[in-house]
Image 1 (cartoon, rainbow, N blue to C red):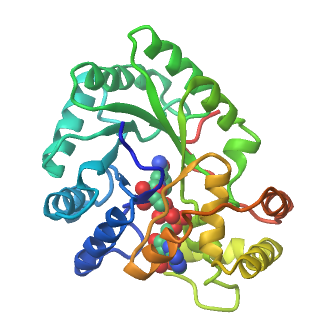
Image 2: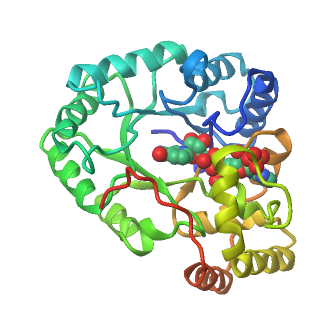
Length: 315
Ligand SMILES: NC(=O)c1ccc[n+]([C@@H]2O[C@H](COP(=O)([O-])OP(=O)(O)OC[C@H]3O[C@@H](n4cnc5c(N)ncnc54)[C@H](OP(=O)(O)O)[C@@H]3O)[C@@H](O)[C@H]2O)c1
């Protein structure tokens, strides 16, 4: 696949507007120069008049980038299991549209979510479409997102029959969302099946950076509402993170991202500015020791509040 071991998530959701594009291009350039070459996007990122904007931007940034590491850039997109996508051909067409917006082929195509929780009959054809993309050489690899261990095993069996390997599985995984690993056991299943685990929202949407507190200001919209509910219950976890960060001379974001790496996952933190990206890149090149990881694990396990799980996450 030629993917890096660390990545930048480009969701363009919380507070994005087009005046940020120059800053985002600077983030992209900084990442690639520092060996961060896997970029995660989705065909549902950017709605309304901004339809497909994240893919369009990543395509433009990739084309315009002319420095070291260009050949290692790996674009991973996620195709939404929209209710109107019902046939295998609809997935092939969707991926072709993504490639058009990107101005290049998609490297890793992922199914954004499983429909098993609400329309299980829809899923088979969409998965067939993913396999078609691989077999037709339109993508280098195939991945899944928000699939639990039972669904993952079923898909693996289905794909095995036609020799289509599953390269990655992407789930919400952070110190505030340990559920996919501690309760669903997904890391072990991925290891058994030779699948790489990608940790999305590794900073719990920004809660683990330490910059938000229940006394301070909250972000706007749904994220603010969510933070209001969660922050009062996570003071001990944030305290533990802060202590480890201070003793390591790192930031809380760097500790949170490094914890994901120590767990054998590939974190894809979102960054809105060059400063955030630079800080997050500082999570690379060193590792927390076993004692620190255990301390963080204990704080995470006893946390009074956790991140809400994605409604599409299956078992
Ligand atoms: N497969 C799926 O269903 C799914 C779902 C969600 C996300 N994802 C993927 O995962 C990627 C990352 O997830 P996410 O953006 O939801 O959550 P995240 O990475 O946990 O949080 C990112 C947010 O935290 C803040 N931040 C990041 N670095 C910071 C730093 N060093 N210091 C201070 N604040 C910092 C920024 O927001 P503020 O500056 O506004 O605080 C940023 O937008 C997405 O872009 C997407 O590619 C996938």
